Image (tube, rainbow, N blue to C red; front, side, top):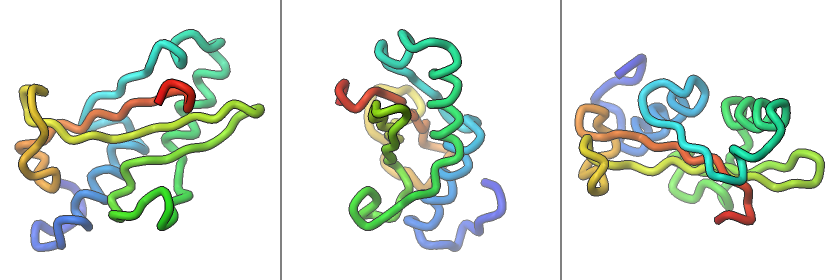
Length: 115
């Protein structure tokens, strides 16, 4: 794990791991939906850039303070991104999302209409 102590609260560790993953796309898998894949390349690049730069977390979009969901608009089109926590085999949910040794993060980027 990077700069955050293993003694930190689990929510703090999850939030840190999510922020690092989302902002770098390193430390998990990034998935785009068919709607995102069908966008013009420059729009797709802007969407992915906005996901990486996202910092507008509120009690409404981040009630558990894990920084695992966000939404934004570009030219009137609404987009969502979501981080889910799986075990290393990607067959079940992670038993401990605060522990990167047992967790694979999957970030999905989608059109809001695909939710």
